[in-house]
Image (cartoon, one colour):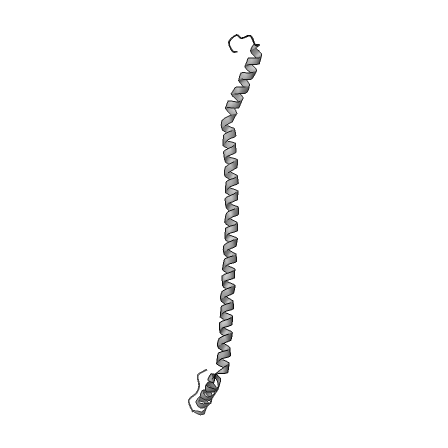
Length: 107
């Protein structure tokens, strides 16, 4: 018990015990808060990583789509250009000339 005071000793003991309890609980409360903040930060970090990965995938898909579209447009233009030229006729003439010779055509 505390030293003799005009207040009842049981009251001073109760107040002292409450203060000691608060001081004793402070480190564990601080660690609990620290762990909670760390878990929340880690969760937010994972959400940001997933969002960044989704954005990279969308960008890659857009680049692939543009590349394929460019290939298709280039191929169509080249095909149209070849069809308008005399290349098919020349190839047909060459094939006829090769067939006319006695040498077998490799297949």
